[in-house]
Length: 138
Image 1: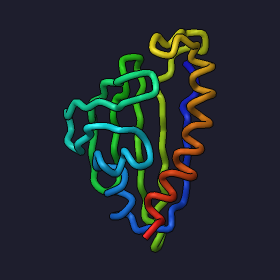
Image 2: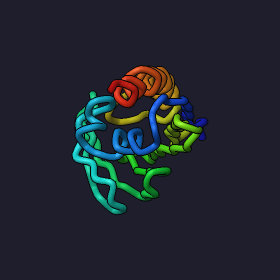
Image 3: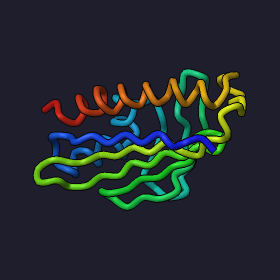
Image 4: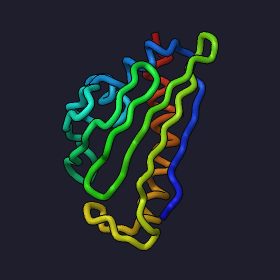
């Protein structure tokens, strides 16, 4: 199996604000992708990805500290973990469930190795810039 993507950032915002930004459809759309997410275990939702609609399902919600969902049909999962650090919030994203490097991901028609490399850079930008701006802008 291919290694998970893990990104951790310290955000200058209280955990409640970060949670609201990562757990509502409208807020997720501002920093990630359009969606119809709801923070309800078992909720089926769709992310509007660059490769077309991606079916997803919420697996675990522990507000305001943890969110886990299944992304698309290739075995991926995404978790958001939030931890209070004084007046700040440590946010960790994990994108896992990758198959072997040579497996072809049908929607992208690319190998896991290529898609993971692209997504690793994408997550760095999304978390380090878009999410940071969404939660730190008054």
